[in-house]
Amino acid sequence: MHIDKDLVAASATPLVLGILADGESYGYAILKRVNDLSGGRMEWTDGMLYPLLHRLERLGYVQATWGTSDVGRRRKHYAITPAGRETLAERRRQWAVVSDALKQVWQDVQPGPVVAEGWA
Image (cartoon, rainbow, N blue to C red; front, side, top):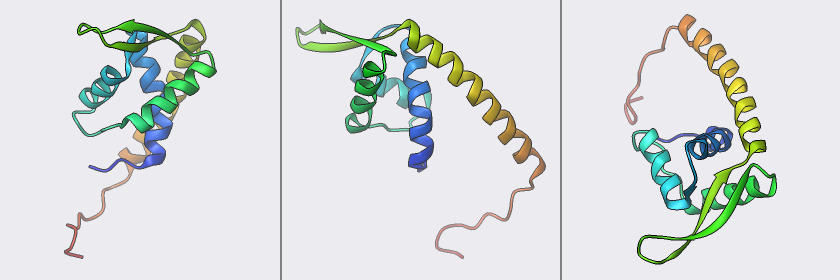
């Protein structure tokens, strides 16, 4: 399934902040968690995640520290800050409104006929 880039962009900050609210993490683990949470339907890339993490760090929503992996490699760990928790709470409220509105619209709309690609 392809997920529109606008929807991915809109959901990226609350997803990352939500993941970090469970505890500090590093890039690859965040990518894996997004993939797991979406059942493999959201496959983020390094090129999408790291600019987001750097922006969240500049905004003061996450704090980065250098650590060492189990095999001795240096890796940057990210943790949510108090400002990040406040932002996450606000984004949760906003997404709840959007989600409720979509549920109401979709509940009242009958789905149209499904046309298989290439058969129209």
